[in-house]
Length: 163
Image (cartoon, rainbow, N blue to C red; front, side, top):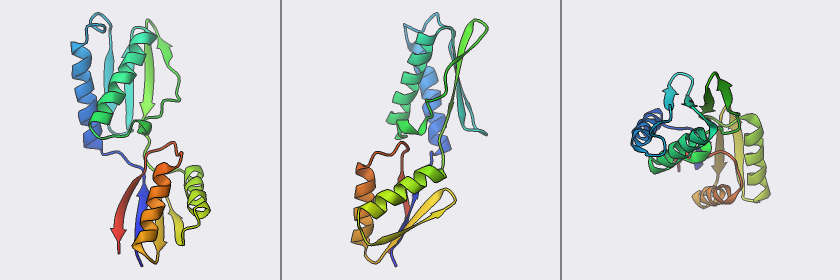
């Protein structure tokens, strides 16, 4: 029976490249010339640490990072922007965790969207992966189209297509 997997992941090498290109762009920006800014990727925990001397420079760093990620092919929704910035002495800091995997609440929402589409497929949760199985490949492609148009807060990739 044909099947495919729904995942949410970010390639670590591409993310590292995007952060490095964003660092170079920050060095060349005139509006950030005298600002004490720093951008660092912690590869073990997948958290991007941003530091700036005021909140406006910090928001500019976030904008530069997201634009570079998009140009590298990484969806901007893969960053968790919900954490607030915090002061550390004269500097402002912000940690941006990179979302990987699909948590239980979002996976239940995805399965409900698949069920509401009334396509004859079966969806099963396997840790942070959702496996969709159907009788025809056309049904699977229809599920992909439904999920692309739905309002889900995380980027989804469709891998491991078997016929």
